[in-house]
Image (cartoon, rainbow, N blue to C red; front, side, top):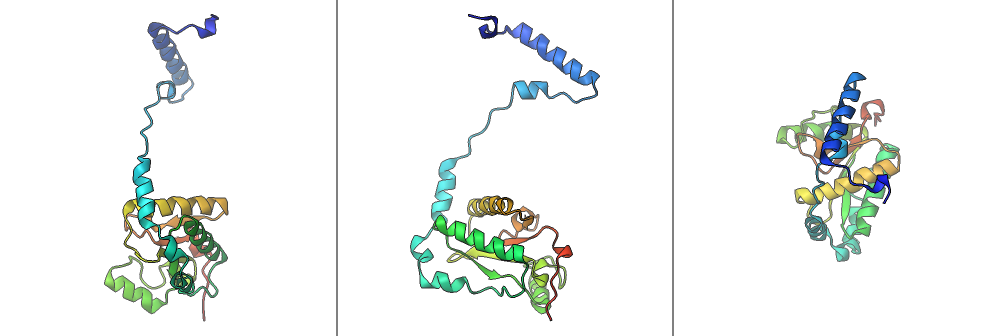
Length: 199
């Protein structure tokens, strides 16, 4: 057995840790030596609950139905930002491969519709303050349940959406990360720089 294979005594390990922490402190660095050498245990994600959540949102028969195809034409996409159009397409397609029927009921929102939504309390943005008013946002909901998905189901969709955004080089913001919970909403991170005006 070589020296490298010998177990390090607890006393020696403690002295090594202290020496490394002291050295890090002398160089003006905050020491995370103990955290690196003794990381906290990784808590297992309850995979069964994620599978159950995904199964609860899945509906293969509906994904293959004529109604699902009709839903894909619901949103007004004319002149919307190319990144939003691409994102909607890839997210709906990916969720369909998981048998989860999703569609975009809305991309554009008129100023009057925006003010109406504000008065009803379904948005915090007045007319002109929403990315929807400028072709830079999309709402994507479940084909049967609409917005009525569980938090776990929305988080699965968010995970897939964020992964797809990264893969496609898209800088998006998910409304489920806001204090005002809006999990169907996705918008360009810098939408104010890309406003599209419709006449």
